[in-house]
Length: 115
Length: 117
Image (tube, rainbow over all chains, first blue to last red; front, side, top):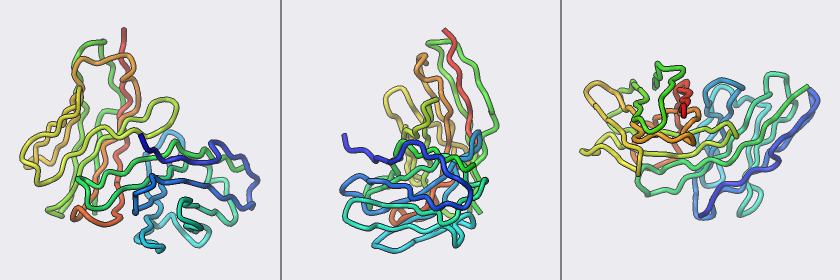
């Protein structure tokens, strides 16, 4: 069964460093998303992406964040200058248009720790 | 603004019993979708079940069913014959809008379900 994959599974970085989180969505999906979950809290929406542009972004998704689909399979989230409060689990998700519910399927997540 | 409320931070159930996890929502959009996800201790988010606002019947997927009461704005998840592997965090989520477009999910705070042998 097709699934969303994410790399790396864990990343430790120093405050102020840039990180790139990578995702490979399900191959026939056209809508892509990033969410984050701070430890013990609910899942929060960051950004949605369709047709090579951002569809919607949350207040969390400030100028430090960017997304890109560099080729036909990868979808990346870049944090330019990490802060301590960026420590969280980051989930990529994808969905297929014109399907019932357009259910979003999530990857296993990248656990980011900023020191 | 969207809002999802899960009022049960934790639930403890005996194996083989049925369990109901509560979810209420608030939206002014007549078209919306409701989802339940399971998050085991390993951290991934697993889709369980979907209910559309215009669906006349409650959704069912194997041991999972959704008790959808539109007038009360509730979408409770029912797990029948619970198993030890059902122990996890469960999130209710809502997506507003028509069934097209890259539309975000808004999640509740989650309910931690523990199944006792």
